[in-house]
Amino acid sequence: MKGVRELFEIIRTVSESLAGLLREYYGDTAYSEVMGLGVTGDVSRRIDLVAEEHAVEELRKTGLDLWVVSEEKGLYRLSEKPDYVVLIDPLDGSLNYSVGIPFASVSLALFPYQQLNLETIPQEAVGVVENIFTREWYGVVGREVYVEGRLVETYPAQRTGIASVYFDTVEDLKNLRDLFRNRGWNLRLRVYGSASLESAYASVGKIDHFISLTKKLRNTDIVVGYLIASRLGASVTGDVSPSKVFTSNVTTVGRIAISPPERLIGITSLNELGQ
Image 1 (tube, helix red, strand yellow):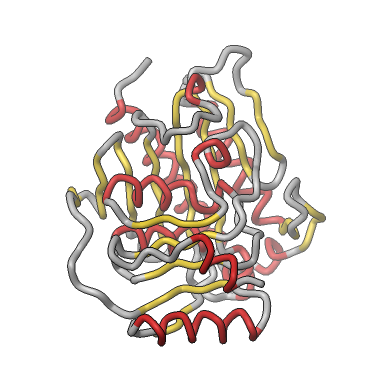
Image 2 (image 1 turned 180 degrees about the vertical axis):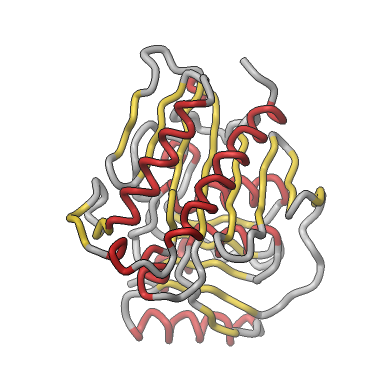
């Protein structure tokens, strides 16, 4: 078994390789072709499949005994006796990418196979989310959090008022507006289109809130943001738990809110927002 720093460098190298490939293919309309549906039921474009295949092959080359979980084809058993599980979202924001909006990311998280489905967050997990276009990255190395190589030890004190919110109905948004108004919180709404990156933003305090009321988010979307939040003390509420996130399959985590420590959105309030 390898140390967390060595494991992080491995997945960081895979992330850089994948992001480079995606920058190379950006703007080529042939890769926007819809090929069918992935295991999650979402549309799979050619670029989604190419990205997944590239990521899996790069992980295979590491020589680690791995299982890889991804959104297009599900579980890849690269070893009969895995030491680690890797959750990947090889292209989070593929709609943005395919229509020429340069906001998308790659996400990888690795944790010991023996810590599958535990009720606690794996302490030896590592993960990275990388913005394909700006190359900014957010990483977890065991208990430590890094933003573009800089160690971050505490959740920041300043507040931006920015909330990235995914919702199904206008009523959901009205309920959220009322909740924020009643608590005296600013609401500057943004929806960027890459949950992996947005959840990381909220977890390090670049934005105040990442909220999804759609019940459609998957563990591969938010695993790195979830890890960062747990390390820095951001509040996490919703239908999310370690046993749902750290699995050997793609799972739906349901509603989730990542917020500043003092702005906990209780589970009752979160459920009422999405009614």
